[in-house]
Image (cartoon, rainbow, N blue to C red; front, side, top):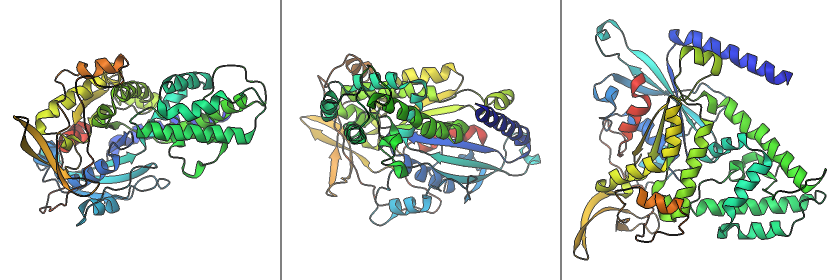
Length: 469
């Protein structure tokens, strides 16, 4: 307890010092980038940095369009203890003669991009250029989900998790093993490891099937903790848990996971973010079916409680630390749709995230939802099919490398036509079939001054950082 109080005092002093010196130092924007698996976090950061350094494709970022940003350059990151986001390697893969998708996010990393900005407005002639640092913090979306565990004890988390697993084919093997296990018996480490392995296999299968809430996140991305007791537990049904029993030990390990894994991440990294983008593969969830859509809706509403949204007022910085001022929910892979369907995708995203967005708006944060593609991989076309014209996109398939025209199906103008069946527990869409394709990155020929092609990346940047430039 004393150590915790001392830690809080030290952090309060650091917060006061940061607040007092901030007006006299170069401004820093800490942008958190996260999303659920396969949402495109690595590509987003790589393309954002490339397009801020070469701003020819950023007309909706006002400071780029009016020339206020004079130059942008990478600098050593401020935190020597974090891995650097490997921007150069990722960009090389995307811009190679035969481009490839870079590996997805598996750990936290950071990158500092410094922007030399000439102030605009009435007094611009009296002021010289200033430097604004953009610190981009990349972290796995699975870790974000873990923040929702902080308010749940082992019994609550177990009950919620087991309830979601009911009826899912991916959970059958784990539930069968759990039914044969006496959780009140004395701890047998072999039994514990078998249960944890079966539960981890379920989480992997559930994620592959399109489900969003797959906690604990480190079970999917264990790193150097793989095989440790802190990752060797599983949800258990309610019941007695005598001393030294499997049930008692799993509850202890769950609490240790929160204390030793989740809390340090929140304290050291997440709580310091003041702008956040959450990337969401809405098209993938729609393709997976109504259960995946409802799971995504509930998940995004839950995890927003981990944010501390609001405005970074002077006193709140001193007494409460930083608060997230702006949160952007971005539906990725907009290039998989013809632009005629982008309004529907944005409307579905807004409705899907309504609970989460309202919670953030109520707390004072500015939020928005939009459809983007950080790297455009397709071109638009129109084909004839069954006597009607279809708006399609064309691109190179990831598997096989062939060129293909793709039409995912008509997204409804009214999002309730999707969210209604999802909330009501429908297993499949009754009147439509929504498809997805995996496209390879297209070979790029970039003009001097142009970054990679994208859809609305400049609009996303304007929302997230435009007011600070």
